[in-house]
Structure formats: C-alpha cells, structure tokens
Length: 412
Ligand code: HEM
Image 1 (cartoon, rainbow, N blue to C red):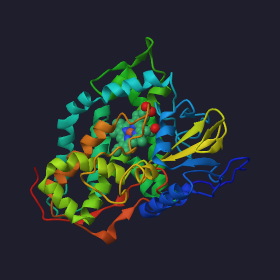
Image 2: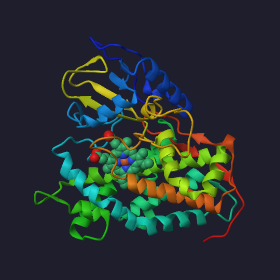
Image 3: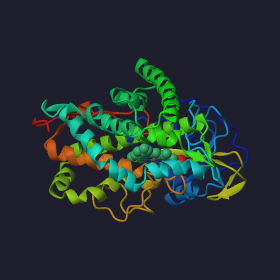
Image 4: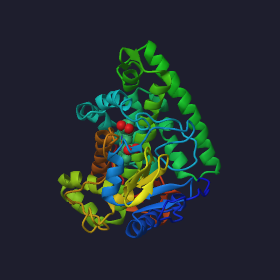
C-alpha cells in the first residue's frame, strides 16, 4: 500500500521494524498490536518514513489530548498529517488544523451534527434503513456489505448534505470501493477515478449553494461565516470532504463488523433480539472491539520525552485506537466481547479536541440498521467461507463481502 523506506534512527530508541502496512487481516493486525503494546508500548520504527508508535491506552489518550505537543496540522501539502504513509491525500478540515484556527472551523460541524440536529434526522435514517432492507428482503439472500452497510451511511450522509438523490449512494461508496480492493487492481483504479470526480462535484455543489441556498448541510457550510467572511472555497471543500471521507466508510465498517459478529455468535444475536435495550452498551462494545479507524498520526512540535523516549520536533507519531482498546490495563479481559461491558471508555471516536463530531449520527445509523436486521431477518445465516475482509488493516478496517441467507419477508 505504501513504500517502506527507512529513516535513520539517530538517538531514537528503542527501535523496531514495525510496518503498519503489512496487516492484511483483522486477527493479524490485532495480534501485532497486542505484541507491540506488551513488549514496546512506545517505540521508534524506521519504516514508512520513520515514526514513533504509541500503543498503551493512557499514552494514546495523552497524545490525542495534548494537541500542543502532538500537532494535527498539515505540514506537507500532499501528505496527510493524521495518517502515516506516502499516499497523496486531500486536506481534511477540521482534522488537520490546530487551535486557534481549528475552533471556528469545528463549530460549523458541531452545530449541524449536534445531538438535537441528529435527532431531527431520525425519520430519514429510519426511512433509508427500511428502504434499503426492502430492496433484498423478498430474495432470502443478500450480500450485507453491498446491500446494507455500504448504502445506508452513504444515502443518509449524502441526503443530509443535500446531494442529488440519484447520485447519493454511488458518490459516497467510492471510499468503500477503494478500501475493498487492493491498490494496483482495476477496481481500485476505478474507485480512485470516481474519487477525483467526487471532489469536483463537491466543489461545484458548494458554489451552487453560495448562490442558491437550500435547507441542507452543504448550504450551512457554503454560507458559514468566520469573522464576517465566508469560508474560502478550499476550506469549505475540505470540510465537506471530511464528512464524506471520515463519516461514511467508518460507519459502514462498524455495521459490517456487527453483522459478521452476530453471524458468528448466535448467542449474542439472540440476547440482542430478546433484550433490545442492550443495544446501547452493545454499540459501545462493537466500537471498542472493532474500531473502524485503527490508527491516527500526529507530528511532535517540540523536543520532549514521552514514555521514556526522546522525541524530536518534527517526528511523526502513530497512535493506535485498536491497541488502546485492547489494553488490559484499561479493559478487564479485553479479548472477550461483552455486550454489557461497563464502563467502556474506548477511544474509537478519538479523544480530546478532535474527538469525532459525527459520533451521534454514526450511532443512530448503526443502531437503526442492526435493530432492523434483527427484526426483519433475525434468522440470517452467514456464509462464513464467503466473508471477505479489507485487504489492509492499517488505517481503516472493514469487510468487502458478507453473504447471508434468511427466511424471505415482505417489503415494508
Ligand atoms: C463509526 C463511525 C465513525 C468513526 C469510528 C469515527 C472516528 C473518528 C475519529 C477516531 C476521529 C478523530 C480523528 C483524530 O483525532 O485525528 C474522528 C474525527 C472526525 N470525524 Fe468521525 N468517525 C465516525 C463517523 C463520523 C461521521 C458520521 C461523521 C460526519 C458525518 C464524522 C466526521 C468527523 C469529523 C469532521 C472529524 C474531525 C473532527 C475535528 O478534527 O475536530 N465521523 N472520527
């Protein structure tokens, strides 16, 4: 997925050749992170441009929280500051901005993704989940990634933004297609081409909303003012892009994780059917156990010692949500999946100022999808041999295919 080059270690120690980009399965990635956390919770790896790796729960939370020492600000216009690696990435705002510039740019999303604003979206989320299940419920078979966990977040997010309905699902699924197919394949290349198209469309839609406002999130962003000035076009684009790129395939991955889990663990499925009230604690446990965003990155702003290691200004730091969520110091028996785990202070939505503002919407989409699957196809049988994971579990983990059969039911 990315070039593995070596950067001299200097006085950085301890060191280990840890290559985050080789993890091609969830179990392999989990095992690698567990081993790293146990043996070397803070370590320098000279691979992938050279970076520190931080794996313990408390240390991960500290790096996330201490934005003054561990900056998110983009320094290279071509390269993401919040992931490690060489891939060219468009700017994401507000994620790749530090205070004080971060605050007003975050505010626009905090308003349109607040708990009250999301509650107003509930009927539309329910509509799209029902509509999506209606498309396959009479067949008695489905591929639940393609048929449910991809379209629901795409349709909800794009409608909320104000996208033309006929393009909504295909526009947002571009991120899933790129994650599902390995780089170098024609399918990945087709996804990358649609990605360029999507960026152009975002730009056009924002210009249109400036001149012709509507009641949608695109308009809220296009006409948002900081100190009496509209946002520059490229900033508005980066905000919209963040909501699609950061919000759609992550929610897809969480839903897919739960569908696979419930297919493999009929006991957990039956408990959720018998006691739907368990969905709240179950959602947090799905988030802890299957974090869609597996890692993030930061840049050290000033020479410092962290975890007993000498860090230098400009050093890159990789923090691992998955390692933190599996830390036995923070979660008793972390390898067990416990539908009623409490407390459950997972870091799957991040920690600190950049903590995910889309968490309320993600939870609503997820809970509605799982509730309706358990209500309308409660006896689904997973074709275990047909389940396909994403080919790389470095940044986002997820599933490319989840084939199931079930007793057919009526459309709603
Ligand atoms: C299960 C689904 C989701 C997961 C696991 C997730 C995860 C995360 C994480 C870990 C961060 C922190 C990144 C960092 O500190 O660098 C984040 C930030 C963000 N997420 Fe989400 N997210 C999800 C859904 C959403 C949705 C639905 C939206 C919007 C519609 C969204 C929009 C954002 C934005 C705008 C930020 C940046 C916030 C800032 O920098 O202040 N996310 N998300």
